[in-house]
Structures are given as structure tokens and as C-alpha cells.
Image 1 (cartoon, rainbow, N blue to C red):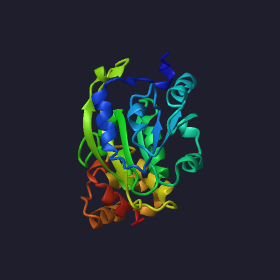
Image 2 (image 1 turned 90 degrees about the vertical axis):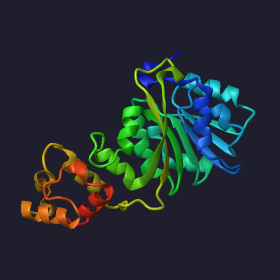
Image 3 (image 1 turned 45 degrees about the horizontal axis):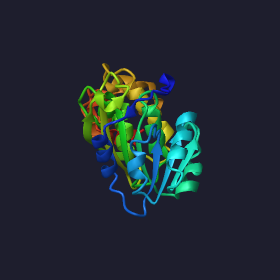
Length: 261
């Protein structure tokens, strides 16, 4: 039985599932984490191709059905809310490195994605399906309407590319919007150190807090950035206009500007 509270839309189009699994480029020795497998559209393809497969499913009934369906294969089902799981529980089952795949629930897709960026091992392959609007925000380029702090945050951690749009008819029940499949590869090292990340995120929120205003106005609230004339000089030093707005700076420029505090 569908549970609206879990944002369930089950993938039913085999061709889409096949493309997602192919994008993982699985090798015989690869371990895979699947988040929210639902009725197992991706799982059926993964079970015979991965060395080990861990499914994290929040819905108790679905978790039980998955255990029954895949009981004779190298598949483990963990009934849990992914966002409350310690990462050590995953690595204890799969090892330190594993590939990640998911048809992400729309209502928690962004939260799960940012959690993955923070914890996945360097150079981890992730193939994820988002609500199209969210996926476009993750991949957006500077100067576009979709570009924002989430776009910058994503690029700090990973490289991504869109693999294709999925229509509502590919799901049961069909959602009201299209979906987007995106492939990510986490960087060998994030552009911001772990110790600086919280401060950098606060810096981004401040910069993008009032999009219509120039950065020299928004960043005056950060005492480390100095007065307006100092902020303008720092913007020029990273190759940006003194009159620039937040969405005009690339992720690289945001990192450079942060390090000029």
C-alpha cells in the first residue's frame, strides 16, 4: 500500500531502470548501496551484477517483501530511515568504498543528497533520480535562474552531469512533475576542508540570502569581510565585479572569496 507521507512513486519503466544501472558501470567486485528501493525495479537488475548489495528501506512492508524476494541472493535489506543511520553502519556492511544508487523520494531528496556528499568516500560514483527542478538546481551554472547556494555546495563536493529526463508515466502513481537522472562523482578532495565547511555554508547562506541585492551589501553582515570598499576589493581580487550578485560568482570564486575573509 502506498504511503503518501514517504513520497512514494515506484519506478515501473524497465528501460529507465536499465539505463540507471548501466550508468553505475558496475564491476564484478563492486558493492552497491540502494536507498529507497521500493518495489525493487532497480534491485532486480543490481542483484545479479554487484558483489554485494545493501538496500535501505524505510517502509516496513516493502522491506519485508524485499527480503523475501531476494533471500537467496547477496542482498541485505536494512529497514531504516536513511537520514538517521550512522555512516559506520553502511561501511561495516559494504566496506569503505561502494557505489550509490537511488530513485530519491521527492520530499527528502535534497536532504539525502547533501548527506551523501558529506559522507561518501572520495571518487564515489552516485546515480540518483531527483525531481527535475531539484536536479537542475544541483547542476545549474552561474548566472542562471536555477543557480544558488545548493549549486555551489554541490560543486564543492562533486562533478555531476544529467543523464536524462524521466516522464511521470514511468512511475506508479505518476508524480505531477518530471524527474531527472544525474550521475555524480565525488571529488578526490572537497574544495573546502571539513573544519571550514560549517563556516563556508554560513557564508553562502549570507551571500544568497537576498538575491536581488549586490554581494557587497549582503556580505557587510560578516564582520570579517570588512567595509563595503573592502568587500568590493575582494570581489575584484577573485575576478568578480564589485557590483556582482551572488548568482554571478562561480563555485571556484566563492571558495576564493571565502578564503579572503
